[in-house]
Amino acid sequence: MEFILTQIARVDIYWECEIHQMLAKDREMRELFYSYIDDGPIDIRSCFYGGRTGPLKLHHKITDGERISYYDVTSLYPFINVTTAYPVGHPKVHIINKNVNWTRAIDNTYNLAILKVFVIPPRKIDVPVLPMKLENDARLLFPLCAKCAKMYPEGGVIENYRCTHNNEERGWVSTCTSIELNVALEEGYIVTKLFRVLEYNKSDSELFRPYISEFMAEKIHSSGFDNNIKNNTQAEDQFIKECSEKFGIKIERSKMNPNKGRRTQAKLMLNNLWGRFSLRNFGLSQCIITDDPEQYQKFINDKSIQITSLDELSPEILMIAYMKKKEWIEEHECSNIVISLWTTSAARIHLLRAMQQVVRTDGCTLLYTDTDSLIFTHPERVNPLNLGPHLGQFTDEYPKHDIIEYVSGGAKQYGLKLKKKDNQQQNEHEYILKVRGITLNYDIVNNQGLRYETFKRQVIKYAKTGNNEPIKIMYPSFLCPSIKNLNVSTLSRHKISRPFVGKGIIRPSDFSVLNFGHI
Image 1 (cartoon, rainbow, N blue to C red):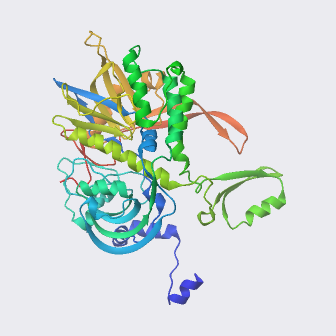
Image 2: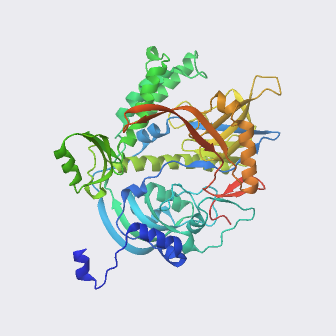
Image 3: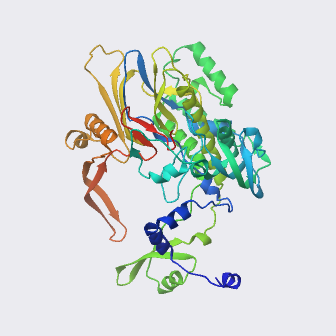
């Protein structure tokens, strides 16, 4: 502050909470803040996005000659680890801040980099490419208009929704990998401003191959041969040969014995590796229990921490909860967020290619995606995606069933109505219902009313009226530990299930979820 006062005659000081209050009251100030273009240094974590999750249609029932398929990518993240060239070494920092006109991938001369750019999406595209997150907004969006995304923080139900904003309003500042930006440029995105670049000179395509090969072999051994090739010696030999040639995975026939415990352990080792490099060590609360006055004084006077609570457990014992201030945080020993963000970026591209295959095939419609899986409709004799037993290939989640009907109430909540292929009874159906955060036990399904049919009615009402009426759930025996009281209590816990689609606009006539920016 002393330095700032030497440079500027007048400095007004406000608390952050005061700024938020002003923004809530002053529309002009709010629009000025939201339209500000940040051309400052790259925050690498702002390039770290998750998977594409959510419905593209809320309800669909098959017609004659049509099928619904639910396909899952086999070991998506291990596949990316073993097939992707990762940037290694220290990057060169480029501070550019100039106008450009990139319309093709060859315009981007930074082939291995993290870039901060102003990007304008195309007016029309079958599958949007670049992800975006708004400030103080948990949604991971793939919009065609940033202003529409800001205008509809909770989505909406609008039959004749059309975006009318200009290119500058539709665009946004994106921090992205060069591989994802190049795909976007080939699909019609335009870069008009280039702010900063972290450019890498070296890449390594063998970085994780030995690790993945070892634990993938363990997973395959403990899974056994797939039922489609089991007891077919020629097919089994071909599978073993392909594992070695494609991924360097050495499979021994004598070790092919199903073992659920070992399979789970191998799967954890495969899927958890890349995420370890991006573990955050800020915003995490810690606590100590002490009866030492000297230790108490040490924590009270420590400028590097923020004390969040101080509880007296007894006349002589205190519990101090605290968080490290962001400016004092040191990265942990295995921190390398570039590895993690490169992994998720390449994984989104892999799913994007599958989504494009579906929507660009006549008679096919995408219904739902979830990071490494998709639900889609297609004609009985035409399937845009091929199945396979290897890493990165697709497997059918319900090979012994026909999916008759699909319904979704938003990201991480969907239901399926199934019929066994070998069942001649027309009226016998099975139901799958997944709702994030809710365990569907007997009591909830039969006594509290959250089951496929009630979920479906709830979603259809929401899609037609925008009224997301909740179903209230109560868990009578929920274990609640208390560090402060040093006990574990059994309490009742309440949860609410209701549909919510915040990543697009619902068109009630056909239950479609339109992209922000739809014209």
